[in-house]
Length: 305
Image (cartoon, rainbow, N blue to C red):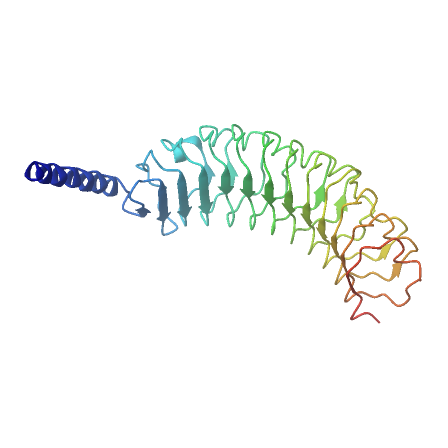
């Protein structure tokens, strides 16, 4: 009986090796593929087109340093099973409407380090399952309405773009967003209600912008716990500067140009634990400036006159 089992075992092992070998042979020459063809990583030379024979079983696809001036539907044909897509450093200037609509299962999308300038309401059509979107290090100047179909998005990174203002239409549709990074843009104005749709936002980064005031922040009923507005040009904090932020725990305002802090400037922040005001122009602090900060653990006012 044992003698009969040995040839069968050898046959099974041979079949397995042939199957694995076939998967490797299906991998494009510019790419690395895992044994199952579910993870594919491709690197170009800056002039190559994206390979057209990508494994249909791909669930994670990384494309770097290709020539993709326009992201059109044909660029990603045959990879409808994707859960994660990275297309970086590929000189991409535009996303055609519906270019990603066949990727209905996509949950993570990274288009960072490209040359994107504008996004439209059709740029992310069909991506209802998307939870993470990285658009950092592009040249975006206009994104109003671009996220309207992304109702399940939880994290959005817009760091290092050329955005100058935020309107009531900028973040339309982002009902589940929890993390928003706007660091290193050119944002100088916030339209009243710009964040009105972001009821679940917990983490907001506005650092390294030319903002002169936070008076238009409108977060009534907000779940925000963290705000970084450091390295801006904020000059003063009037009374009740942060209305509606009763859940805020960390506030970073270092390296602005703050000269005056009014009485009760932080009165709405009863849960605040960390307040960083270092490296501003504060000369005089009223005894009432920090009223109601009963939960405060760390206060930094160093490097002020």
